[in-house]
Image (cartoon, rainbow, N blue to C red; front, side, top):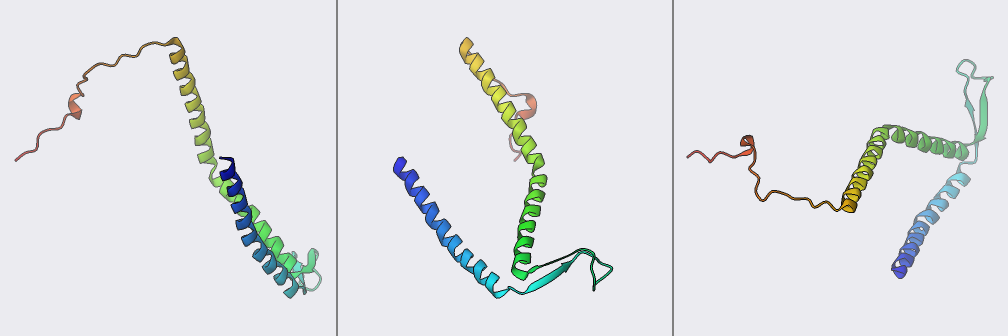
Length: 131
């Protein structure tokens, strides 16, 4: 069991290295190729002298926008899944209540008896096929 965990950790490290090293190389190459400065203006009325503007390298702008996009997308997904999280919490609460009820019954050791044969209600009986 310990050897299996160790091999899984090693495999994860190898896969992470195989993904992260080329990704880092691509990001560094992109940053070196796109060093020119760009001005981002937040003033829609004055293009020549904007009231709010930021000048930064193109690669930094793109990386910041990617990070902002990931954060906004993560928040949107988290908000969409609130109903599922609420349902999961309710179901976990129900399961724990049921388990405690079962445990209490086991402690009292009440024998449960089930009838040998139970007739289904009339609406559940199937009619024979018509020929």
